[in-house]
Length: 169
Image (cartoon, rainbow, N blue to C red):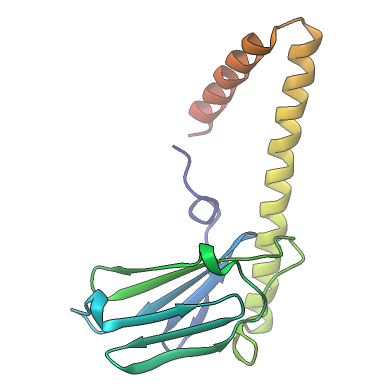
């Protein structure tokens, strides 16, 4: 199985007093360090389209209006190793040009260097996706030209994709 894009290309994090946040074309990730031994029942997390609130043990750690809108129903949070809360927000605008400059509207802004690196990463991600899509379209056209039936070209395309994935590892 292929690793997620952020693992293959590295993340460009924006460090904060409570942890860090970073983004891909589709998602914004928030990692919050909490006291070791924190239990899920101690966590209160509200994920709305334009608002985020996180409290642990009754203490507010993060709250405010998000930089841009997200798909509220697809936002999730997890408690990892009882010491890290990871929040994943799904962006509604998934353009490479939609690089969030801060996590919240007036808080946790990336410095200019980090912002530039984030934008570069999103542009690279977009180009990689487009190249992959172009490869699939080209393969479809080639298989159609050489007369593969629909099932045959799908099987052949999957075979080629597996060969490419294995070689790329």
